[in-house]
Length: 120
Image (tube, rainbow, N blue to C red; front, side):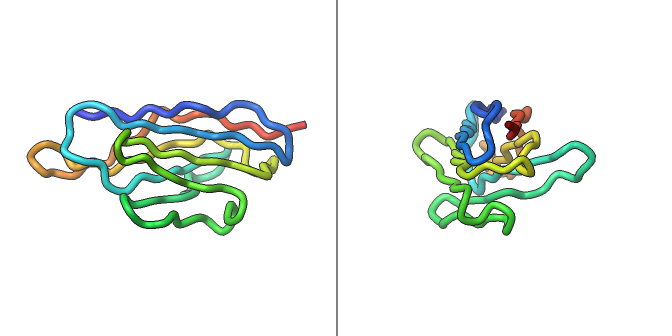
């Protein structure tokens, strides 16, 4: 069984930066695509960025040029560097990992979410 745990987040000023981390742990064969989603109050959860094991990241238009997704395959960890933060980035951020389990079935795992608040 696997689990996905996020860290980072918190309060930032407009124009500031934050870095989120998400690590997959437990018993599994490998970790495939990893992604960050976010959900603001009263809105649907939306995809922020996604990254494969070797591919470059793909970003939502709203964060292009400001956010960078990266991963460390040896640590089964994905990062989200968020720069030039805007109040509109305020949301709960969720990590998603597509994990190949022992036995080769594939399952999506979600983290518990971490709050990002951008405010002066």
